[in-house]
Amino acid sequence: RSAHGAGPDGLTLLVCVTALNAGAGVFGAVAPASALGKTIYYCATGEFLLLLVGYGLRRQGSVELILGLGLVACSVVGVVGLLELTGISAYFREIAFSLENPAMAAFSGISDRPVATIGNPLPLGAYLSLCVPLFLWQIAYGSHRGARLLCASGLALVAVLLVFTTSRGAWIAGVVGVAYYFGAHRARFTMPLLLAVLIALAVFRDAAPFQIKNPYTQLVENYETYHRSVSVAYATAIWSIDPLFGVGLGNYRHWAKPMGSRIDSPDNMYLMTLAESGFVGLALRVGILSLLLLALRECQNPSLSESGKPTVARDRALSRAFSASMVGACVNMWTWDVLYFPVTRGVFWLFAGLAIAHVRHCKGID
Image (cartoon, rainbow, N blue to C red):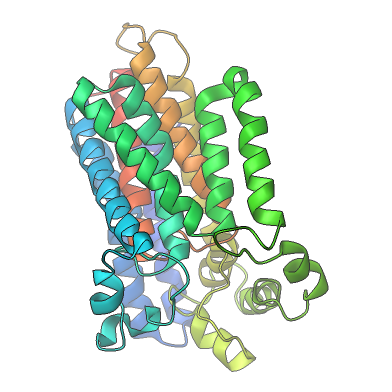
């Protein structure tokens, strides 16, 4: 009865094996206690959250309610970011993300880009781009006109804030998500405009009213010193220590710092997973995401569900919105540790869980 493994027989098995793989990394970790704690924490706020939401919600109304609350929260982040951009209020930057708060002191050095309630423009951009396709669905298919108008306002705030994060990975994720949501037909009209904006922002260094680092200078001229390219060498060297199971969750930094790395991660989710969970862990997580996307893809077809009821346009569009959000995030994982940072990890797996609950609704699975 599973939709391409989206039911308990497929996805639950993969998640359990993923947790076992993560646990196996504890035995070879530099800091076993830290690795064990990270394993429990990441699983509880990651893949197990997916299972809890995906198989705990029995009604489509509950899925849409939680999704709506998530978009309200994202709109609040947009308001806080707008107040910060306009200079009206920078409460979180001044109080929460300052040297006076030891827990958030690491975020205190960012002054030229908005951080809103997140603390760093890169995860902020990743979080915002995750929500964009779901805003589009809510605007088109929301139950009430007032809710649709509020979502349109929220999307406008999110779009402005996303641009000012100057996170090119988040921009690309947003473009991919929007293009996927609208599909091939409408993409013929939207893609040229979106790509033109993206290229203009990413290539030209002196873009007003903010500056963007020139990717040619970073990736070509300064390849040997650019931290992202150097991190590839660190990550592959750490991966070679235990290619199958990795060095344990949260242990990348314990190996990278002695090698000369200045940062705690490679800013690449795939490299981070490969180093900490090995080839097995990376393959399992790719498998989980693939099963989810395949199940959502099936629900986008106007065919009969397993209960004998045809899928409706509204449900197909929501399946497409969830897919667009996930695909955009997978693209962004090449430039940011989306599943490592607490906010983006939690939101990603929450949306993934809502997507599974939605698939079960579309397929008529109890």
